[in-house]
Length: 122
Image 1 (cartoon, rainbow, N blue to C red):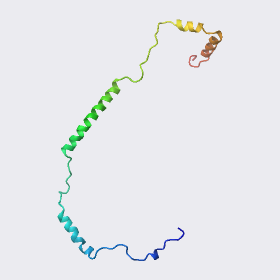
Image 2 (cartoon, rainbow, N blue to C red):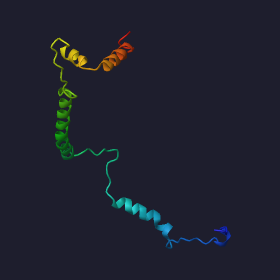
Image 3 (cartoon, rainbow, N blue to C red):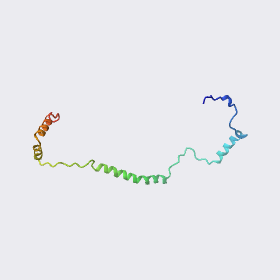
Image 4 (cartoon, rainbow, N blue to C red):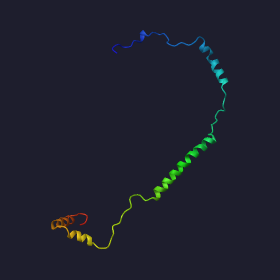
């Protein structure tokens, strides 16, 4: 690509050609084609066929039913795992027993952590 393209070397010769008399017969040929083609009414809108509309309704009916069933299922079925409630017998006997089974160092540590808790000591 070292050389620059020189348009003067191309010349003024036309690379395309048409048959003799082409432009003289062009208008007659176009008018003949227009006469041969059937005309339609201007400004008319093609209406969809009833069969096409019915086919769409037949295809959409099952999808609509599935979507409605899914929506109802989402609204009715509770979300999340069921919560298990801890049995409440009204006493802390098991907690006291577990606390008493700890060593003295563990008990002192737990007590110190709870004493320093910001949320419990407000």
